[in-house]
Length: 592
Image (cartoon, rainbow, N blue to C red; front, side, top):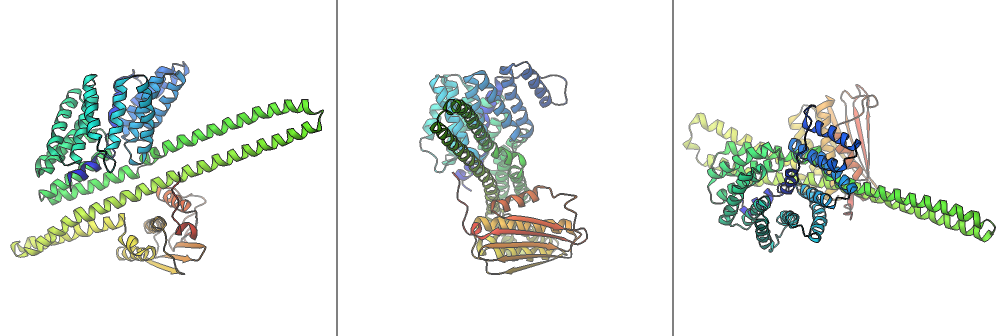
């Protein structure tokens, strides 16, 4: 793996924390000694401050609350909610400095997640425009660093980025902004890593590391050790690279940064593989998969992706309420006019016409607002699903093209030198290698089934049923009627995931002898049923719950379909799904 690709993937979710921590450095409010946790104490303090209408201290207390949440949970929705509350109270105070400084904090926090990069640029742009107008250079420098952090993740990387970062580092030194200078040097180290200049990357990483150690900035120290590890790996110094990665790993673990831990585990696996320490390489690869699943499937990550869209929905609701208030005011005025115009039939007719027009406009505005809210909901759902499938595909490719190839090479090497191994070593060694190769293929296929992308939905479902029959005592049967036309890639993936989840649930909970999957296609509708003869359940008394059921309902709803569960204790369970064929054949358009 080249240094450029490593640096690109490493910085994807990590570098937003600098300006976030800069806000915390300016305020550390007193926390009550009573209470079970610092978070509870700050919440109680906020409630008291609100009662006394001390809004300036409320805004700063919400900043501190966001920092506490970040320390405890890492990247989470509670932190961003605290910042939006702080933004509200800065607005009530009319404090423009605090208000736009909060914009910087929110913008940089969104850069943790690739899907939120566009919103991050929006907040940083507004903040930079304000601080340039007020000639606040330290804050302008913070905004420049935020944009540089986003720019270096783009493909292709802007050619002017080196010049911009050097100028920002010079301004940081000129205005005695040690924090900003360390961060600018750190970004320069990463940028030079991407263009395969390890000497320059090491120079700037070491300079940034010295400043970060003096200021005791743990996240920046961890980041610089990571870049030094990449440089050592580029120079084929794998042992030194592992040592640097381990130093970075301990600091990243204390910061609860899942994205950083994922990348460190992946590069550590690569370094162990180059040292031919395949046991540790395999363990590090499994940790990579575990951290990736924790980050992308956690409710915290999904919720924060919806946070900005939720704020837009709330803004539309406010606009709708304002329209209703305007309509109410207009109705009062119309009543007053009606009293004066009652003497004239012509006036009455004019009033009736005016009121009808107003009602029509109000109804149209309400319908438009509802449509916009629905589009935002669909967009957020699609972003989550695409994020999950994209991450699964990427991890599957990494396992197949990276670890899978390495294991195959080891197996070929062992087979070519069989005579050099003692008999009591040869058998277990071949067994261990076969098991590792099989496990890697199973993990890769579960993440992104090869049959689905190559042959289509029906062969993929047949392959799934066949593999499950090999490892389970329950008999699985797949039946399909009618010719299924080629479906859109997005629809095929969603249907496959739904059937996979239903089969897993039945195998896990139903204790059935036979599970039957039926797929029936017509020109208008596709019908899918999954039936088992297991123990069943009373769904009316015990409603369905859990992340798996929620995912099934979300995917079916996105495809415009309906799902129905029917079950009776002791008589099995039947799940019936109806999907419109038009939605399956035509990929959903990208809402703007």
